[in-house]
Amino acid sequence: MRPLTSRPAALRAARATVVAGVASTALSGCFYLSDPTTDMQYVPSDGNIATVGPLQVSNVLVVTSAKGAKGDLQGLVTNTSESAQELTVTPQGGAAVKVQVPALQSVRLDGKTNGNDKATISPVSFQATSAAPGEQLQVAFSAKDGEGKQVAVPVVLDQYPYGSASPSHPDSRADESGSKAAH
Image (tube, rainbow, N blue to C red; front, side, top):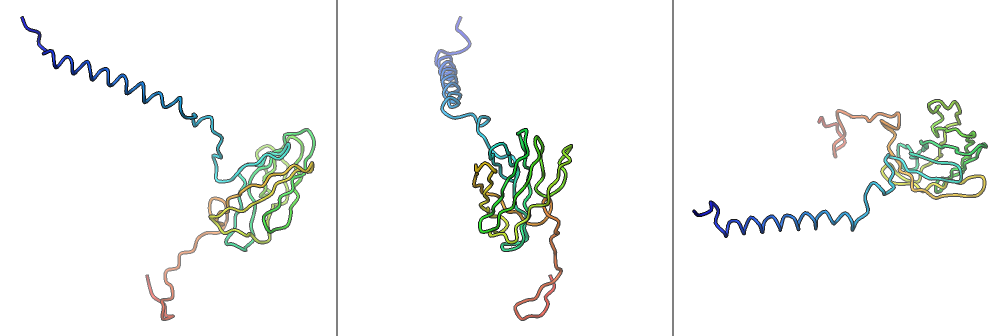
């Protein structure tokens, strides 16, 4: 009696199995040629980070309405040491601002309280921001011991969720002739 499958069909099935096995082994081997993304450090927020001595600056960004306008710094500074620390914040083209951070506590740069930490500071603001919303502003963070770090800080528009301004939506605007045109 003759088998139900022919010899060529069985050979094709065996070849397909071997090809599938080799392909899966080769493709899974790519793992060994690249770094796992879980091992790469990244910033999981809109702001940037920096470590200056015992001070950790996290989620730092600047909120402003336009280039040249006042800018408010937002973020969190955590002091991991057993003594109070001073952080100096200097924006590109601007004046330095000093921030006092109590021992083993965090302070928000917008002046509000942070969770269970009761320490607050005066809000950190810059007279004029040299970068427009959507760009980055170079800001130097330095500790009292002289250690410092230059960080590219994102500049965001003064509206929700970071600012208080709300966008305006005019129902009409002037056309090229200067008269009002309805939209």
